[in-house]
Image (cartoon, rainbow, N blue to C red; front, top):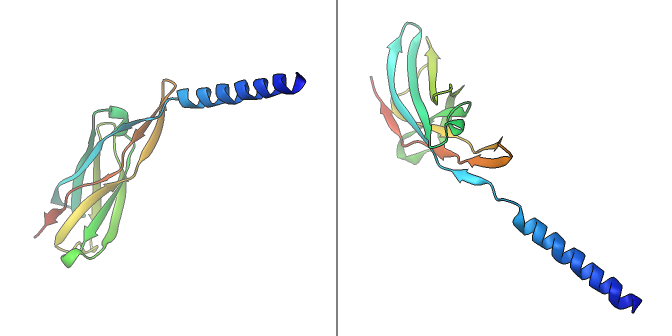
Length: 136
């Protein structure tokens, strides 16, 4: 009888543990979009700017954006610079005078970000913008 009672208790504990694990909420995944809007010549060089969009404003602000130059014929990207988005999701990168920015395709990359909000976990998805062509 002792053996049966111990086995039953172990079975109940295992089942309870499995149910508790199954009830843990999965994080909500939120789509993110990034873009390189345009560029302009400023006193110190060239400014390239864009923004990050999401249905959740928390997924727009404070995101690290990497500006990448994608060479011709699909050559891998070269990191040009980085910035952090403001509260509206806007970012900018200013190339200093003398820093050459070749004509061609530029994209903004944003990595995935995990947030805790109100006891719930949100995962802001990472993304890469479509290429934007910069020319003189």
